[in-house]
Image 1: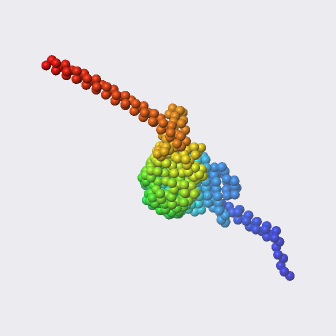
Image 2: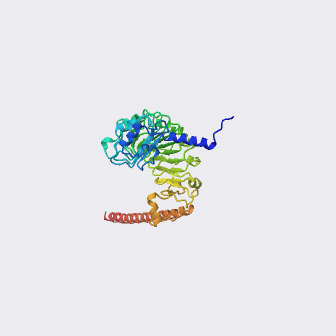
Image 3: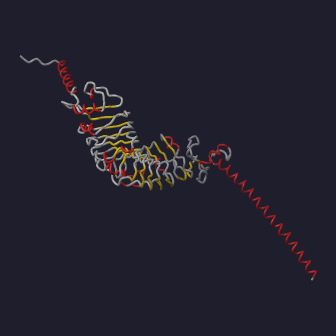
Length: 421
């Protein structure tokens, strides 16, 4: 007699019971005690299975017989919250992610768990200058893959390299608006694909170390005090999609090597001291959607046609007083703020400061419509030259008449003198 096979419904019930048993594993007692010391409500002694509070979010693994916390996030922290070392120590082996968002009154945690793969601090640790987030303690996090710090001051005596030196696994780096000073490091770990060091006080040049990060997809160095030229070797960043160098002190021309970055979609070089002509190769970059070249010292004729400009999602070019656009290539209906049309010699028809006067009628040469606008300006110049020429002719005639009268009087005097003799 064959043994009776279990029914499918019975098998399903057994599987569900097994899964329920696994998911019901309690949190490790030491980690539970740590959470309770933070006054985090855990009514069932298992915060992994409870809805998280609005200020604290907890993620756990499914280990057995005890579960462990893998992620801990604090938002809008209470002024009474504190994180002593003894609180985080029981989490040091399992915690992979730790983040703080809008915790200005909180003192930064010391002896951060080395197990962390991700650390984030946004608008936190602000109210006590003596307890800023320490770069030396961050440097211990050798397993980090993501470091995100924004609007959170960092204290470090040896600049950025001290923080990054041991982070060989780091792929994403953000330290923005954090009072970071000094120079760009001479070397980076090659795993980096994302760098944002904006809104700090970095100085010096854009070092070659940046151009060696061949896997880099995004680079934001805007709002610093960087100087010098954009390096030609930036062409090595062939996977770069986002490049922002705005609001620095960069000089020189835009290197032609930039055209090698075919994946580029976002480029911001505004508010620098860049000069020369605007390269025409931008119009050949098929993926480019955001281009900002405003507030530099570019000159000459803008090399873009209307089709290219309309295909961009964002385009700014104003604040370049010696730059102009050809209205036979770009329609007057396409408004380019802060940019004048060119005359027939390739110079701006008016400077940006004169544009408002022209539009208000105070310096009215008429609308520029190719040769028509030039004819009006030329006619006015010819009238002025004719007027000046007339004045010069009258002045010459006056001098001639005066000379003749003087000569007659002189001859008369000589004749009379001879009679006396």
